[in-house]
Every structure is written in C-alpha cells, then in structure tokens.
Amino acid sequence: MGKRRAPEGITVTGTGTAASVPDVVDVELGAEASAADVQQALDAAAAGLDAARSALADHGVAAADIQTAQTSTWTERRDSGEQVTTARLSLRARVRDVAAAGECVRAALAAAGPVARLESMHVAFGDTDTLVRSAREAAFRDARATAEQLAALAGRTLGPVVDVLDGAGGGGGAGGPRAWAMRSDMAATGIGIDPGTQEVSASVTVRWAFE
Image (cartoon, rainbow, N blue to C red; front, side, top):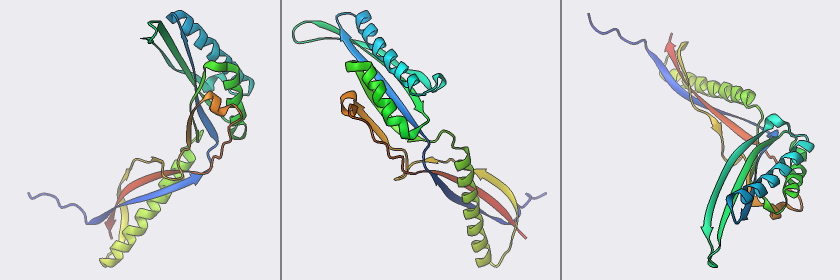
C-alpha cells in the first residue's frame, strides 16, 4: 500500500496583541552596609532592610507580597590597609496601589536610612490571564482572515480546523514595562509613576482543511 495522502488544506500563523494599563508596581529594595567584620555589616544591613519591610507593611503591602531576594557579602582591602566587609541584602515587594506606590517606596527608603538602595521598580499586571486570552483571540482572527484570503485566491473554501498550535507570547515593545534603578538619595523627594500602557502578544498556528 502507498502512503496515505494528507488532506488538502492551508496552515497559517496569526498574531495578536492586547493592551491595558498596568495595575501593580514591582519593587526591589536593598540595604548595603560596610564594617570591620561580617557580622557587624550584616547586622547593619539587616536593621535597615527590616525597617524598610515594616514601612512597606505600614503602607498596606501584604506579607505575601514581600519576599527575600538576595543576601551577599564580600571583603576588600582599602588603600589604607584596612580590611572592610560589605553586606548587601534585598527584598522584592509588589505594591498593588499604583497611585500610592511612589510614596510607599519613598517611606521604605527613608525608614532604612543611609544603607537603603532602590535596586529596581517597574509597573506590571497582577493578572495577565485576561489580556493573554484577548491577544490569543486576536491572533486566531488574524490567522483566519489570512487563511480565508489565501483560500479565495486559490479558488478554494475553508473547511474545518484540523490542528491548532499555541505560540509563545509576552510583553514588550515601546508599550512594555517601565523600569527604574537608582540609589535611595535620588528618590528622597518622592517618586512619580506614570504606568502608561503595556501590551501582551500571542501567536497561533492553525491548519484548516479545504471543503
């Protein structure tokens, strides 16, 4: 017997996007301190980070939205011959009130004092599922429109869908997340946040049989 012939059809990849205003701010705060020995450096950094954590909680950030990010130490010898150890600790927090995020971060930095560092801050979505579904629907419509046009050009009519492959999607582009990285003293007078809009993209590859 010969090989079974695959049914005639057409395969098209469609793309789609969905955009909305980000509704959370993700922040990474750090504390860095230097001392003659590692324990002193760790104690100073930990005290600063604990103060920042408490300030975040006072401004409504839930404990579930705060997590440890980094703990590191290193030792260096300065030109004077003195050996100094530096400790760096950091945490990540999700602030769910975008309008209040700037004041929340400013208060945390102020509470931590001179050891405070603002490592990064960016706007994001607390839940991307709805946007991803919308982008996927747009991608399917795009694929179908292209398939119908190509089928018509070939003098054929689309039949049923026989295969669908969901492609990778994500955010990005000019409308993507906006990020900041700065030392605490740069934020001492407050942080203004303009969330703008952010896009989520999706692609689907669909195969239709011909009628």
